[in-house]
Image 1: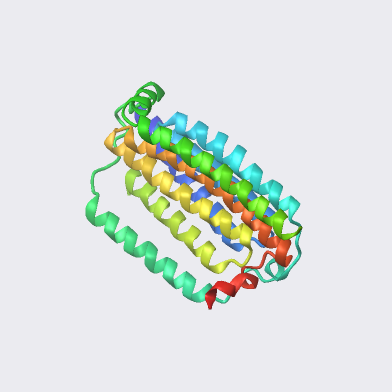
Image 2 (image 1 turned 45 degrees about the vertical axis):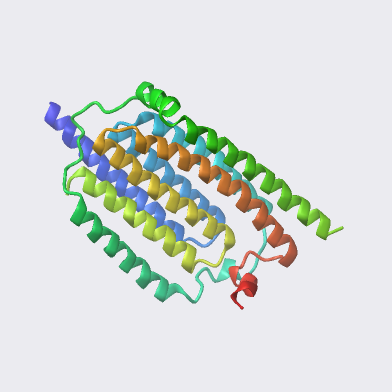
Length: 173
Length: 100
């Protein structure tokens, strides 16, 4: 029974991996930005499923909460706001299509080769791993400085966004 | 292929696809979304290796990447809105002025 469940887990992992890869490929092929956004949402949800499957449930929850709910909803709003019909809607690829594809394949192969040469230990899924309690304690004790610096980053981002809008208003009178 | 290799190869493939999307697509918003895909691929590799070594450092880094992604979108979207208001197009070729 235990072995059967383990096999079912592995099967699910392969299914989720294939689905997220399919979503990423759909992002490159689909024409309308809204469909690309939906493909990206699907990819993110499948990645969240993978996170849940390897045992980091809190990251899976935040993947859905932050990426799918906050970031992607924002992008979908902007896509609906900017209903500009131009050349990029009828001609989806730039003239870099062939060199870009060759470069991406070479890039993938180089990274995969480097990974294969350095890492050979199998993924340990027998241990329970760390839960949110250990993570939270580490986050706020060991990494508190990084946590505080992110708040500075967020403030800087908000100020920059306001500055961009102000610059636009000034230029248009 | 065991789980670590599967997930790392998936992360590398998603990153390469995101990079490819930034290079070959013409629509500014689609290019932005491909950047998000690259961040997601980096997150997947961080989670996989955090699980592999059983340390929380990788998970902490994933949360920092979440923050960076939110900040990136918060700045990138107003810039796209600004560009579209000036040129009335989402085509990246219309903004080739910096090429010199």
